[in-house]
Image 1 (cartoon, rainbow over the protein chains, first blue to last red):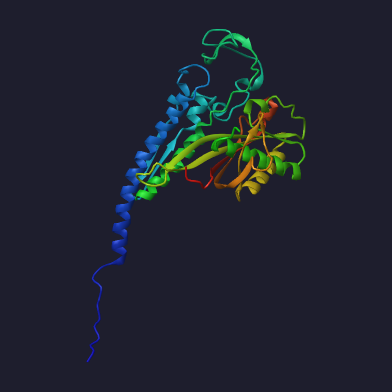
Image 2 (cartoon, chains in turn cyan, red):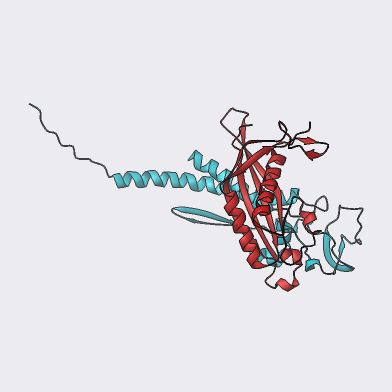
Length: 165
Length: 166
């Protein structure tokens, strides 16, 4: 004779799910922290390595790319770059990224190339607004697209992080 | 015969695809590949310029231990319009045309010009569009102080893949 057996589960599906998810969230948070700081470093390196004029540049833009993060029990997030900081300390951040006729939007501007007047035979000096010479920009600033490059870096590496979890 | 490599093929395929579509559906839109050259175009009222450039490219290994890679190039489409309405219409038009992908050509040149004769430049699959970032470029809220080229600009960042293992 077949007996009917009833099995009463002694576990909570909700608890198991919560434990598993929490473990994954901790791993994801750790991986995201590493990703955040490496993305920040990538943007700084990208700017420093793609200076158009001058071997080194002033380093002002790269040094003003800030990194901020926040953390809650179930979340970790980060911000790279603060527009308010950039607008006050490196206000040419936008034209360096997207290219165009700035500073002074194509109008005459006072400045120099590391203290020298503009010289078309040289491309190893950066422009500074020290008020020495009145000059009119004739060529647009070429775009560096450091934001777009960093976005691509982040997207690809975030996919890698997700695949590993 | 000289041939383009993958990066130039992608850039040129984009330019040819957009040029063909603009010729059918728009008037007074020029497609350029050099950023600096855009600023030499007269750009009278109603005329717009679209500049296509290849940005950074990510190469991902297809599996651990393999030398084969997938290529993920970022194509940057800069829009230089002469009014805000034109800027919005152009970017929506471009997005609608490219989002389904576009033909990928392997270019062959003869005497410095693209050779379209039979057996030379040929379609070799399609460029897949994986994502599109749609960014207005606003240097200043007061458009009057901006140079005419920089007043109504927009940038589309298009992540692509040609679906070929290299």
